Image (cartoon, rainbow, N blue to C red; front, side, top):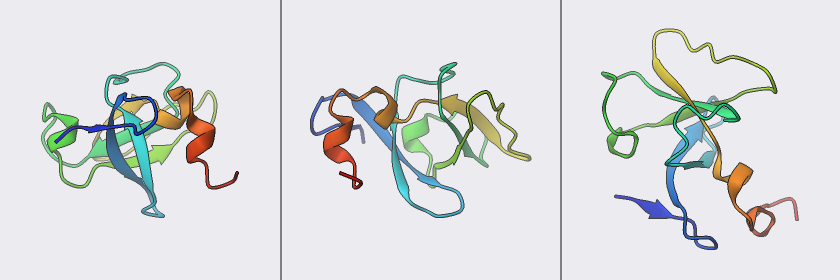
Length: 94
């Protein structure tokens, strides 16, 4: 089931950060984004649609860092916080 951002309407997929388990919205159309700030991965057979994989996980990357997730299928994605024009409205820091 697709999800959309409540403020901008963009399609998103929810993942959880490792190791905290905190949820993070991922831009559904950002697979392989060079500016992607997270690696999204699962330990199932590659080729399954992201939104259909139970337990989608994310690891935050530092600027310029390359993904390195052993024993998993992984891809760089952009968090929706990077692209949403209203991201500040969703921040718990505000």
